[in-house]
Length: 180
Image 1 (tube, helix red, strand yellow):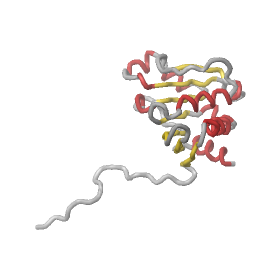
Image 2 (cartoon, one colour; image 1 turned 90 degrees about the vertical axis):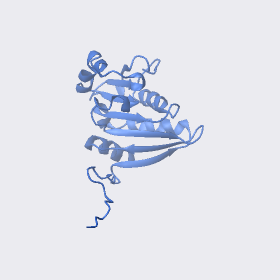
Image 3 (cartoon, helix red, strand yellow; image 1 turned 45 degrees about the vertical axis):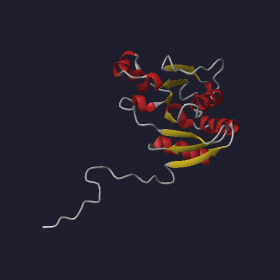
């Protein structure tokens, strides 16, 4: 008896093809493009309760994007990276009246799931406000599904290829609002 070789996947979800309203690819030619994107994103009312994830290598521009976003939301004063603190809260008047708090996470040094509970991250994610996470893969088993996943790839010193994925209705609303 001859058995035909198996060519398909046995137990695996097939790769999803993202519809046009779920994904977008951009090119940022300079930091000014990053800033313009941040301003456009900040102008979207659904952002007030979104969860954004930022993906990319060291130096890709994740923290730069967060700083521009926070400035566009009206955050004043020094904006520091939460690399050592894991999370930094910011009062953002630009989110009002829907919310005013932005929680900026940097999970680069996160390695102990017990820290999630000890630090109160479950409560933060259950509360109103914008959550933005750098290095989300380090806490992926604990975080909710991102509304908008932003993948930043450095092409050279100034140019970035940016891929946006919006798997939730809130994320799709953000993408649609930015193209209007």
